[in-house]
Figure 1 (tube, rainbow, N blue to C red):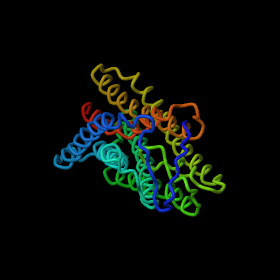
Figure 2 (figure 1 turned 120 degrees about the horizontal axis):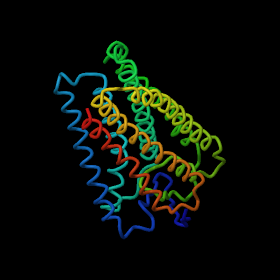
Figure 3 (figure 1 turned 30 degrees about the horizontal axis):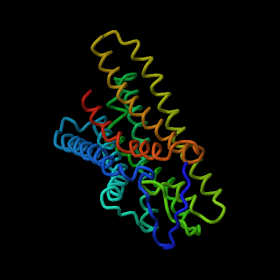
Figure 4 (figure 1 turned 120 degrees about the vertical axis):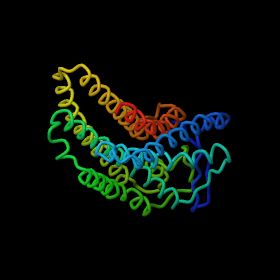
Length: 297
């Protein structure tokens, strides 16, 4: 990644650069990002409205879709408004407390999204592999409890990120070459040893994602085996289409997550603007996942 020799002396303010090297194209990039963001928001709010209004859709799988919509809205909204302010109005100065808050919210919603996708994989597993007990095992009350557990897990594991950072003294350079306050970018601003912060962020991220990925793969291994045994062509195609959409969303989420996490720490040769654009897409593309599921139900 490129090095930045700019300095900023105000200890209470952090400067976000947007996409360094592509400042001249900020407006054009913002048009694409804002269109993706607005269309995605409208689609997800429509899903929430339809499911909330239609009593026949008050079922576990649609409640999970609503949870996915809420996490997608939360994660994208925690980033896009600030990024668009940088692109449109050149508003680059943000308080340290504001950056801590954004960092916590971003990672909390990301962990929540992962938990919801795993819960959806479990729902599909029970529905396809054990359809007779699906309504018994997965009730609306149990789905609500799963959502609460996912929220508590996200808060408990992500809250130490800003708390650990708040104890560190930052150097004079308060400039982050990014569109949002990313954890490792803020860690790099510290003037003291940050081994604890780096290791906690890396271990928690990979433990959470690794565990969720293992559960996801296990569920889908059993699902695929069950699908291959379905004799009805119509049922086979419906099950395959639903699982394909879910699998693609999960694959996209994990691929972009691992790309971002590894590039921040080890990707010195990855172009900075490529990294930033892909990371922003990581928060925008999931906005369309719920609509794809709804289209296949």
